[in-house]
Image 1: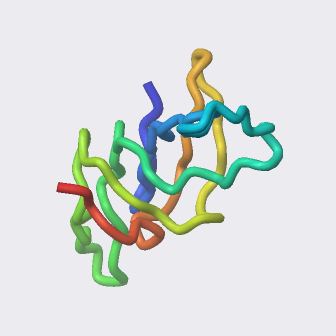
Image 2: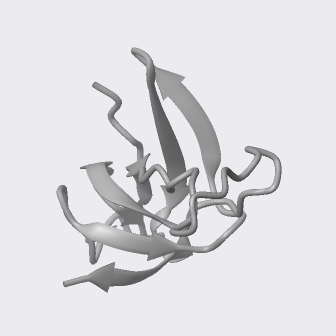
Amino acid sequence: MLKPLEDRVVIAVKDEAEQTVGGIVIASNAKQKPQTGKVVAVGAGAMTSDGQRIPLDVKENDEVIYDKYAGSEVEYEGQQYLVLHAKDIIAIIE
């Protein structure tokens, strides 16, 4: 499994539907980039200058919304993930 460092978070990106309610199939290059996903791993938190860890607000299994163009896309064991800084997560879906 991927283990993020410091204040980074690994997110399993939610697949968006490729077909509309009316049955129209959307080309992959016309779809908007998804902004929601499930947190699968979190880092230990950023380190302050005096050596203290700043804990993250998210935890594993949280459903989150993140900035549209944040993070780096990674493929690991056939699964697509997004690795981003915790500051790029804008909300937790409850």
